[in-house]
Image 1: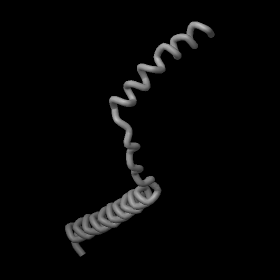
Image 2: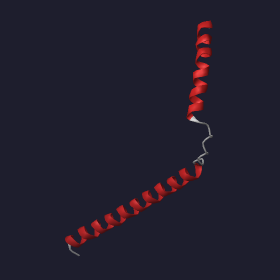
Image 3: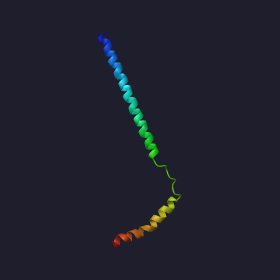
Image 4: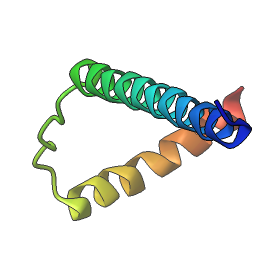
Length: 72
């Protein structure tokens, strides 16, 4: 057996080990992503309130909030 054959065999073994490690890491990342997607809550629909109405309610409450700040 020549030394050049042993070097190639070691290199091939390292490639196989590296490929196995990369496959294992890839599988782990896929499992984590799948678990994250399962655990994520579904998006709720937005309440149908007009932005102008929300602004008006905020403007209406401003004096009351200011009064509370002065009182306490």
